[in-house]
Length: 228
Length: 228
DNA sequence: TATAATTGTTAGGCTAATCTAACAAATTTA
DNA sequence: TAAATTTGTTAGATTAGCCTAACAATTATA
Image (tube, rainbow over all chains, first blue to last red; front, side, top):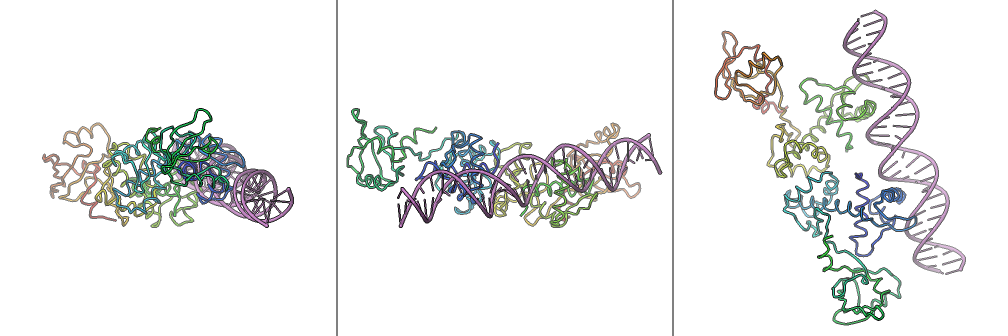
């Protein structure tokens, strides 16, 4: 069983990576700032969470959640959002008041409680802020991120960020008509040289695997199927 | 603001003194046992709570709540019982499952939350165990116990126990149709021999003062008036 | 590429709440 | 009332989570 504090670190990491549009990993200072503690404190906890195999962390490196860590994080997010929904729908809290109280309620330990609450609320799919609520199995219809290279042929996806932030790369990206929130469709993959044929705003282009690897996207179709 | 732990000590003290039928003060070992900690730990906390003027405590003496301490304790009891009511009535928890979860929920800090929950539950007066719920002002209708002999003429009361546990007495009690939770109404007191005329399940009977003295009851009407 | 700025780490302390072990006071019992 | 038992206290240690201050690694910039 995790402590209140450990749970908060996992949740923060989830928010900064899985649910963030820009990054897939988080730095120590960033985590500390998000939690309102000093980097030294966060550093201690990151080492502890690494020992528990809940996060990937290496000295001077960025952190991400392990599969196990993500599982816990999803449970907390589920609890948080169900409580927010309860406060908003049943207790007539206003939209902006729910978060603070849910921050406390999300740490209540009782699987039964949360499953019954879910039922009581009639299995809501989104919370009052419009964020998706993970179901009892920890499945979240999150806009999961991956690189363009990993996308299925034929799928349409949305660009949410880049991995390489160099000016050169960004200019290249720009020149292809790509930008944040832009929809990209993968038309095909050339057998010969692995180039991807993409369509952006009705305009076709071919990009290298190296390029595609550096474009972060989220795919609605995959997310719908996934229900991991 | 009190810590989770401080709250638990105050609640324990409340249970062991104010809500107990036998005592009005509690010893260090007793408090420790109730909380599942060692006496040494309880001792530390008692000194701390004394410094905060939440309890009366003297070295080698028994402890009681101060007015301020009782105020906090009542808030916690209120929260605990409202949550129990919520779990039982809305989430369909069973009678015996509510306590454990309420132990956690009672520490959520939000006056607004608890007042809205109270409203949502339509201002219940008792929790699923039949225990009174303090109102928003911290007023509690405690189900105070006394002997049947002390009850007012004309009042209806509920039998909650006996003083004499001998088989002979219990059989006598039984023969009059009396049992735990049975409602008893006092019809009159005979001037001549002090016998009490009672009505149980529509059946009238006469009992001696000695008999009445050994029946423990709680009176809803008296409790309603008291509002200490 | 050398320097400056940022980011991350370490060592050493602090506090709250707990513990054990030793002891002291109070109470019960012979 | 003296001894035995129970009850309560103290001192010193431990753990989790936080801090500051000093330092080290990395990244950005001149």
